[in-house]
Image (cartoon, rainbow, N blue to C red; front, side, top):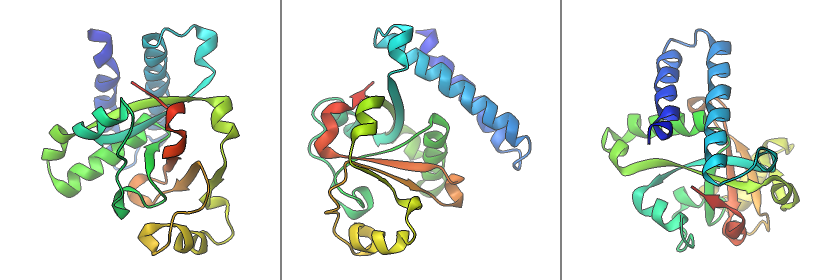
Length: 195
């Protein structure tokens, strides 16, 4: 019971720090790392992992509606096809840190109002690190001309997501403080373990 609330309570402290006009950035980053580590340890214990097994996984966090949470905890299907929910293809879009997922959710609340609080949750999942490293992948920001790639493969840029990749990383704008968004193609969904 109570241990499950701990990461949420810690994040409330983080929100107080981050609304301080950017002051104490190092302190905020340390707090974010601490919260991330604590939450990943909690999830690992929930999965029954030994300490050694915990290091074999990489964790991600996705902001989802209640309906999509149920979908992702089962087969994942049907995946959304709307361009704003499948820009790089059908699959799972996530953040590499819990803090980035919270920030994204806060941005949704700012944009769409308080009702977002009741309609969305942050859902954690993990993938074995060796599998993650073996996926056909791309960090879009590493390209010389990311815009050219996006115009060819992103639905939001008029492209078709037939890139053949299984895992894509992409930097985001100022509103997300440059956090990286992670896309997992639906064909590798079975490797993702949702909590």
